[in-house]
View 1 (tube, rainbow, N blue to C red):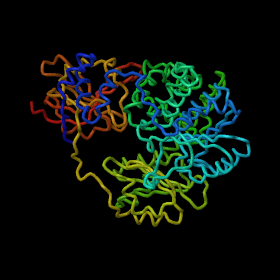
View 2 (cartoon, helix red, strand yellow):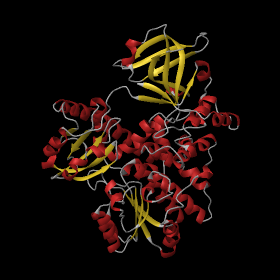
View 3 (cartoon, rainbow, N blue to C red):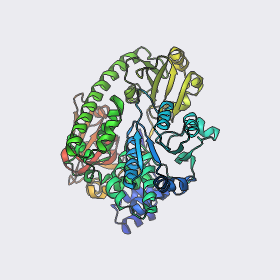
View 4 (cartoon, rainbow, N blue to C red):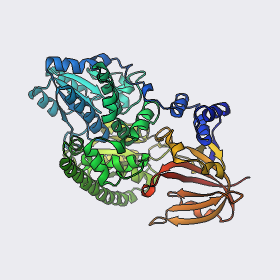
Length: 569
């Protein structure tokens, strides 16, 4: 893996240091990324929540804006129809609670992953009509539900859709459901937000229309788009960055008693600060676990808790479901791993068991894809459908999975997703045919393991050691599309090396500069393969990612090892 140092804008870097008092390393990081993300540089140098672009360019915004006023005037009732993942749950929570605040008659419905599945359900649409709802408001779904939207309108309901999902075939046809819809993929100028981000910004303009200001919104809801944006792996640029930058700080200060109790039970409440990974790998999976293992309503009911006792009971249930998820996930992974051994020569792995939990297929496919370095589809009919298997697919870096599946598209009942992740369904009697069709599939794989690691800036040990957590917090968080700062630590002597972890897959290094005045510790997760080539006492350059860390509750800087190179001095 070869380092490639991005081109620096020296003048911009200097301005960021002098005018905005950014640490020199971070100033160089932002300036090196300016060519790709020109609008992001000053946004991170001086974040301001008032600079949110919002949903104002949306063509249907006027209809969305009038909804609360018209609903109160006409005493209309609204059903918020969400989804079973974090984004669907939190977007439903924001708009449902706000409409309650407005005194509007409203209720919510979250589908079961195992019964209704993703998207609007014809059965629930009919039930909503029978129960007298005037408005069906779809959240994190609905863009592809042409038939269900048409049915709702036929039954006399108005339909609103707030969503950020669009499969390729819908865009190609240029068609959308006959409804009032805001979807960043279908609107020029609307920020590429997740649905919770869209819900928050819609709530913001609702409150502005009612002259209540947005302090109520910031104090009660700002943490939720931050959680959903990170959990849904949405690009952390533009409005997404602003919502996360300000919302991430509010998670530990949340007024929501349900969220506070969950943070307490998962041992995050006492942290000095949450990191991106705390949200992505602890809080997000916890909120997702009810939808994967039982029903997503547990997560929403937690947030709607009115008493500490109620919050405690539901939070404990979610913790149990998450433990069960982890145990079942490990079992399913090893079962899939054994099955994969029988298809070692396949270009794309197609693995199936009728007993696998449909709620875990995405996680398992990602782990198998990483283990075998092959695109992987995990199929299961655990939803109880006698003729169909649902599947999730993931691909390793360098593979466009959706494009790789295109030759077999006609075999699928449903197929959607993007280059790294797909989902859909297929008839059970076509699984073997699919496996054969993908056995020798034309997959775009890396030709060699020596690929380029883009690096933002070189630095020396002394400069890197001067970087404080408070410096990093000014431009935090980093994530999808805008990763943590990458530096090339130049000309340091290796003084210690050790393998760590129960399976010795992690590499711990200690290095010092030429004068031995500055010592740094480097952590190489899953980098044990580098250990044999590293000699204590030799001089090296190290490619690193610089991250915030709160190990054991102590806030610090983590230097994550990516690669090592003999120094050319």
